[in-house]
Image (cartoon, rainbow, N blue to C red; front, side, top):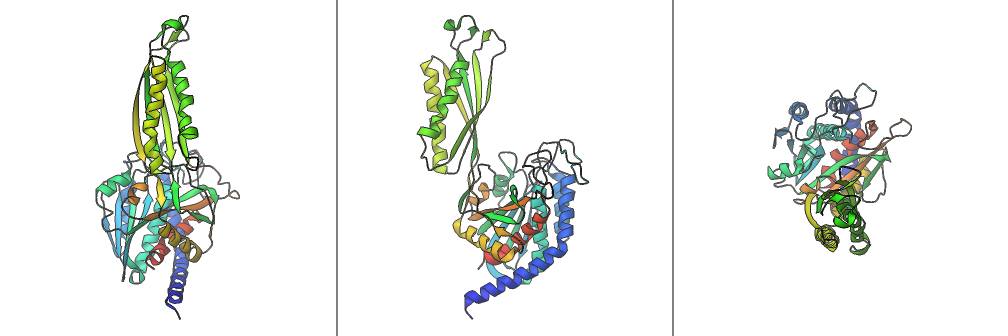
Length: 403
C-alpha cells in the first residue's frame, strides 16, 4: 500500500467519524444558530454574542480560549499529531435591519438582524471546535478558531484581530460563507480572486451659484457634476485592461435647494470594486484626473476624498485545491459547484495578508422550503441543512491541509 493510499484511507476514516458525529450534534448546532439569530448585535457591539460563544467554548475540554478584543474570541486546540497551524474563521456581527420574518427565532432586537448568515458561521465553527476537540489525539498540528467581530463595518474586526497578534504562527487560514444564490448541497471553492475590494470616494465640486434664469452668470456645478459622472465610466471602458473586472458607480449626487437656484457646490459619492490590487492602485489617480479636468474646463474646482476599504479576497491555489478535496471526501451530501468571483467584499482579506488561505461558499438556498431571499434582505434566512455541511467542511480541513 502506498503512502498516498494510506493518506486517502485515513481521510476516509476520519470523514466517516466526522460525518457520524456531526449528524448527532446537528440539532444543537441548529439551536446555537437560532439563539444567535434571536439575539443579534451590531459591529463592534457583539458583547452578549461573544459572552455566549465564550461560555460554549469554555465547556469544551481541550480548548484554550482568549479574547484578543473585547468582542472577539480565539480558541486554540493543540492536536495530538505533528503538523502545521491552521486558523478557521467565522464572523459574528449582524446588520442594522429590522427582521420581518415570522418564525420563533426571528430577531428580538429592534432594527438589528442577522441578515447575512453570520449566526450560521459562528454555529458551524463552534460545532467543528467541539467535534475536533473530541478527536484531539488524531488532529494534526494546532487549530485556531477565530470568532471575529465587525466584518460588516469598515475598518473591520479582522484587522483589529491581526493587530492583536492572532496570526502569529499561523500557516494557513480558511473561512466559509453561506450563499443565498447557491442551492443547499453545493459548495464552491475558487482559485485566485473570490471577492472584490471595496473602496469609496467623495468628490466635492465648487462652482458659482446664482439665479436659474441667468445660468450664463454662474458656474453650474450640477451640469459639471453630471459630465463627471459620465466621464468616470471611461476608467472602466478606456483605462482598464478589458480582461480585468472593475466596477465604478456614482451612488449619490447632492446639491441644490430650490427650483430656481443654481447652487454653489455639489457632492458626489461613489463605490469602486475590483479583483486586482494593481488595478485598484490605478483608480484614485484616474478619478482625480478626470474630475479635476472636467471641473477645470468649466472654471470650477474639485477635491477628491478617496477612502480605502477592504482588499480583494484572493484564494491561494494550493489551499483552495485542498479544500476542494475536503468537499469531495469529507462533506457527505455536498458537491462542488463552479461559480465566478463575486463583486461583494469582506475583511477576510486582512488575514490573507499574513498567511495563504481560502474562502469557501456554502450553498444555503432552498426553493422547496421558501428560503430564497438574498443577503441583507429583511426576510433573509438560510437552509439549516447547510450548517451540517459547514461543520463537516471545517472539521475535515485540518486533516487535508496537513497532508
